Image (cartoon, rainbow over all chains, first blue to last red; front, side, top):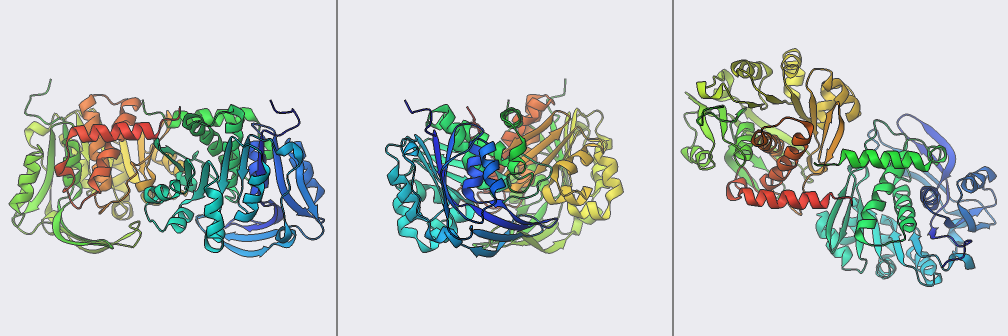
Length: 306
Length: 306
C-alpha cells in the first residue's frame, strides 16, 4: 500500500513559456511544456506528481492553475534565471509547424531530483527531455510497475545511444510517425514498430495526430481513432496530453495488460481532443471527468462496427 | 423475387487502359477504370452487372478476367474506336498523384443503356462518370432499394448543378476529403458532411485513404480504419474497390440500415487493402472470400477497445 501522500503517477518533462502563431491567432508567453500538458491530463484520473524546473520569472498564476487542477508540485524545482522559452508557427493546414525560437534558460542545468514521496510511484511517465535525464529519473523510482517513455527527433539525432539504453528499460515507448521512421530508418510503420519493440519495450505507441494512433505489441496491433473535431485552435502539446491522459487512466485502473492499455488510450485520445480546442491548458482547465466520460462514450459508439 | 439471371447489384463507371508510374515501378497499358475495380470487388459478394464501354481495341484477356471473376457483362458495350486511356504518376510518398494524360476515346460518346435484366436490380452504384450519365442510369432502374453515388473534382467543377440534382436522388454519396471540401467550401469534414447530407442523401461516406473513412448520417458518425499494410504497390482504384466491396457486401445482406452499412464498409475496406497490394486487378484476381473474411476478422480485432 502506498501512503496517501504519494502520487500514483509521476511525470517528468519540460515546462515552457510558449509563443505560438496559428493561421488565425497569435498568443504570446502562454503556459506550455510537455509535463504541464501531461500532468494536467493525468490529473483527471489520479494524483499526479510533476517533476520539472521553472525560473524565478515564472508567473505565480500558472503554478496556481496546476494546484487548482490537483497536481502535486513537490517535484517542481525553481532555479535562478529565466524559464524555458519556445516559439513556433503553424502552417495553413496546421499539419506542419516550424520552431522559431528555443531558449533553454534554467532547463540547461536541470537535474531532476525526486522527492522521497515520489520514489514509490507505481506509474512513471518519462516525458520528452534528454534521455540522460530520463534515465536519471528512472533510477530514482524504486520499483515502478509501468514506465512510458516519450522522445523527439532531437534526441534521436544527437543522443541516440543513450536513448536506446533508456528505451530498453521502459515498458512502453511513444513517438509520432516521423520520429518512428527517423529512429528506425523504416518507411512502413509496421516495420518501424517491429524494430522499436526489439529494443525492449513491450508496447510501442505511434501517434498520428488527427489520424489517430497505433499500439504495437506481441498481441498484434490496436488501431484507435482520434476524436473528430469540427474545429481546433492549437495542436501544441496534443501528444503530451494524450500520453498523460493515457497514463492517468492506466494508473487509475492499477493494471498494465493490453486490454487496460487500449482502454487508457481511449481516455488519452479524448482528453487530447479537449486540449487542442484552446491554447495552453485553457480548455483542460474548464472540463471535468464527466465530460471526458461522455466524449469517451461517444468515441466508442463512433467506432462500433456492429 | 428477382429472376436468377438478374444481378443483385449494378455498377456503372469508366473502363480504362492505364499507364501508371510509382516511385518503384512503371506499368504500361494495364486494365483500369472505376467500374472494373468496383465490379471486381463486389463480385466476391453478389452477382454484379457491369455497365460501361470499351473500344474495339480492348484486349480479350481483360474481358476473360472479368468473366472468370463472375462479373455479369450483359451491360458492357463495345464501340467503334479506341478504349479510354489514362496515365498518371505518383509522388515519392504515394500520397499525391498527377494525371499525365486523359484520352476519352469511345468514352466521349458513351450513353449507358441497361439490359432489361438489370432494370430490377435492388442495389445500384453510380461510379465516377458525368452526373448526366449517372442520372440516365438511375432513371432506367425501376425501384432501387439503395443507390450509392461517387464523383470527382472534375464534375464538381464543371457540372455542379447536375451533380447536385443526381446526388439528391441517391441514398448515399461517397467522395474523398478534398472533394468534400471542394464541393462544400467547408474546411472541416464535419461541416462538409452536414452540407452534403442537406443535399438529400441519407448517408455521406468520406474516404481518407490510408487514414480510413468516415460515415455521416442522422445517427451520427462512424469511424473506420483502413486495414494497415506494411507495403502496397498501387493505390489507383482503391476508392472504387472500397465502394464496390461495400455495395457487394450490402447487397448480399439485403439490408440498408446503418448497422449493415457499417459492416459493409468493413468489407469494402479490407477488399480495397487487397487491391492496392498489386497493380490493376492482379491481387484481387488471386484472392477468395475466405481471405477477405480472415482480414475482416483481423481488422475487427485490431479495433476492439475492450
